[in-house]
Image (tube, rainbow, N blue to C red; front, side, top):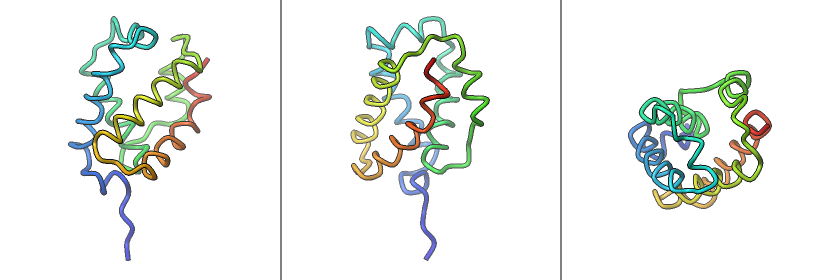
Length: 119
């Protein structure tokens, strides 16, 4: 029996896109993390983040470690910012019907990339 990825299980790009939009609805209201997005083209960012989250779910999009490091270089992202972003993402996934076990898998995949994002 072929095992489906989380990306397939939860509906592919259309579902991930809804998750990302909800994620930013919450994150933009954050006093600590929201200001990172003040002068950002949100349409472009949502597109990139949809691809990134899809990759965490085993979907077809991916970013290399070097790309992730380069994208976040100079943004002064700290562990507290990363922790808040991760918590918001996990809650958003739960709100969109992901099981706790599947959220833990995504959180672990994100955690592996912490060193590429946090300065």
